[in-house]
Image (cartoon, rainbow, N blue to C red):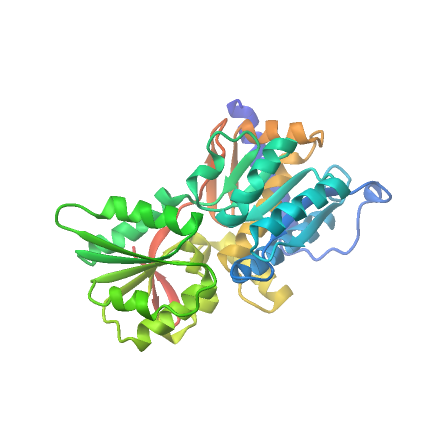
Length: 373
């Protein structure tokens, strides 16, 4: 994409956002009446271990859809999200994908978590339809034509975590991780980059649906710091059991743990995290979206809600005034673009399938997230 076209992309996207934010319009343009809606298939974990992530993502998406539809949708057509609850079950996710495909044939799909994305990515490739994922595992987009990621991969998440470990002068690191695509990818990245002739890593995996981590914790009791790689539901239990075991070292966690449910825990005080700029109160755009979200849902706006909100706004901006076909969605994404949203400004190069936003060292202090400058 040329410079002028990329400038047009960012201006168009920002224009849509500026118009929509803070406006509670309840009417639609006449042009949208009676026209077939644009359908987007969405498979999320509204139940199961990843539900603490995906319920927020769903609500962020719904708020963005309402904003877009209140101004006539895209190209005069309303947008409809076809939601299914995959229950954090890969086999159910595959079945749901095929049922949505048969019944609705949506323009594209959106999904989250590495486990679910791993299951349905081959189906998206086979059906030649764009699948946008919120997931870490690096292989998800390797040699894929139709799979795109809006999420930091392990190498991006590792940067603030390694900075924190260096600042703490950590010599002996324990990693407690869920034994799936997500947990293995992130734990291996940290271990490989941390360990050397003088620094040691001890890794303790646990299987999905585990509820007792006391044996894992006992094996890591003497390390300087423990890095917990898990979905928020697991993190909550692990933190409590770490405190019950009187673990005296430092505790760190990745992006998935940056939720208010975790931050508000008494056991999370002193926790170190890799956090996005969406939590910085000085970032006015994200603060405005956050206020609208909290007014709508009576709950705080976390990064998972931000993912849902941002991806709908991003797609809405890119697809405006374009022919809405599956091939065209892929072409537009492949051309590259500049986007400014709740995670800051993102410059996506032509052909890039991994769209990442920055993460920064932070710490939970008295129930609040403080960025370490």
